[in-house]
Length: 396
Image (cartoon, rainbow, N blue to C red; front, side, top):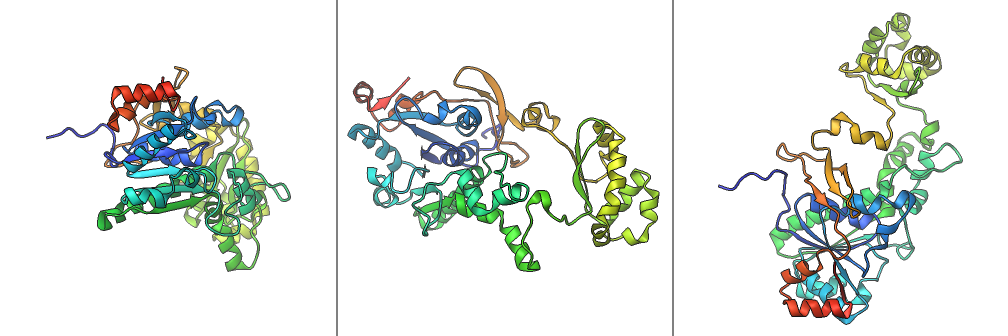
């Protein structure tokens, strides 16, 4: 009897080849790799330029390219392109997120590859689904601006992108959903298919709740900093030191909140017993609550709210997450960076069969796996060395 794996490997045996850059496409491959798929990342000779981004882009490559193999190919050479085609013809899944038509011009379109590999699931991550915008260049920020998310995030008149690559990552997640659905259908039909996910339509799905609000109420949704909340207490409050978020989202929690903080006068007011009554009386309630919270430290507020069922959150920063106790049991996985440095980065946020995905991984150097990948394709050592010597393949 085989031993139970230390981490879930539901996609073990699935072979993925990835032609990607930046965040959206690599996020698809990272999730599949984290679930046990074998992912071969094709990079240009010298490595993907994403590896060398500065500032806010410096975390893109280590975050979304863990657990993959790296092979460097010169796709402008016939020899390098032939290797890429061999990889695609033996793959279960292909992922790409380049400009529309880029892989088609190389002879790596879905239609061309499906002729020789009809089981191939071909995932294209694009800016837009088919329509009048589909040839435009899109980025996460472009989609957030076009799709209304930046309008909803910033204060009125000051559109503001969300604080992470939320559309790139969510668009990648929809790509994974499509791939998994296509794998399930392939079990029944024996055939693969093309899956397309996009930045713009992903944004529209995320702002759909605000579209629905307009449809239901006839009133346009206000940007989040100016919104009329569905609850009277649902905000960030200043304490004596660090701010904290508190939400009171039901009548039962209102009773508990008043008892917990000895707000006897507010509880005695029968005109505040129901949620909608409290929303209408927000201007009367909030000064009491703000004064109360401001008289205590954040730790005192957290200690008082812990275990009560009341929603609350200290306001944390990304760097605080390295030491967050909630993540101590599998929430972060050890990663060796291509510089040789050690860190821990977020594990895929799932539990399967009582286990978390994730294991120690080394971020691959450019072309670190080129020879091994070619050997798995059946190339002999002489052919491999010739391709490296020709510059068609880059190898460490």
